[in-house]
Amino acid sequence: MSFEGVFYPTIVMGVLGLAFGALLAFASIKFFVLTDERVAKIREILPGANCGGCGFPGCDGYADAIVSAGAGTNLCAAGGAALAAGIAEIMGVEAKESVPMRAYLRCGGSPDKSPRGVIYEGVRDCKSASVLPGGSPNACPFGCIGLGTCVKVCVFGALSIENGLVRVDPDKCVGCGTCAAACPKSVLSLAPRTACVEVLCNSKWRGADVKKVCSSGCIGCGICARSCPSGAITVEGNLASVNGLKCTNCGTCVSKCPAKCIEYIRRDLPEAVNA
Image (cartoon, rainbow, N blue to C red; front, side, top):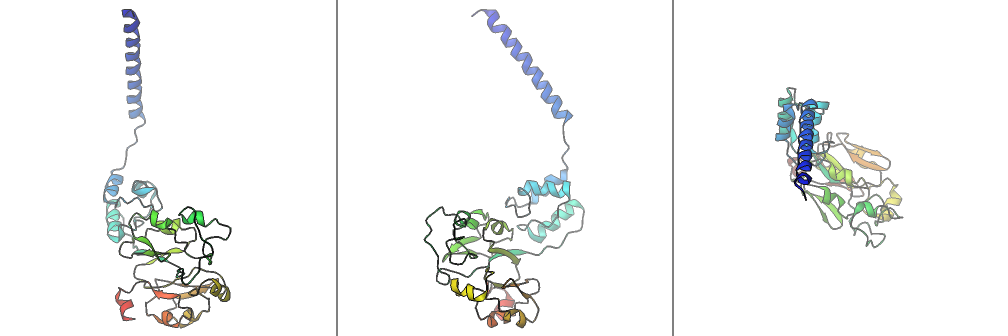
């Protein structure tokens, strides 16, 4: 190969490289977007779990949304009130009150109480099982499937499967709600951390039909609501529910429930121990 055959292509490539480099340098200056320093400060104090419980795509997305879109300063469940106060200080606003939450399972239908309708041998995923013709492997179509989809999405290791049902460790759960969003049966809910009493049922059927598929299901009788001294219980669609912000954890509903589907889900709080 001649000298000219190597030299000229090299020169051309070098000139093109310089031209493209100059264009990129110009573009980086022309289209430079100044980042608000508050975004970096907020991102630095966020926990970095990227659980999505705040409703934004990870901690980076949440930090940007606070500064650029006015997102609430108290949406990070993992950080709690202390983090909310820190973010509010960075933003120069008043800290908003936040109620610490934790997840709980609205189902007490373990295999000994609610027989499984079929033997499921498919993909170990609740969403896959929920599309079966019967709605799920369970006899009760509203109950926990127990294949652990929620366990897989919990980045805090707060969930596990015991006796065919999800178990929530209240000491690890931060109340981000990721598990509730992943559950195809909507059988996981959030409640204030101070709440000790919950209805462990998700069925909307009438009492007689509930008892055919689960011995511990809510029959919608309303005895709990009528006996609650704080008016914390309501019955809608044949299903009782407890308002954790009104409940005083007195335990009256637990003792009065004929179906025994209202239970203490935490007994480590003073209110539950003394009830």
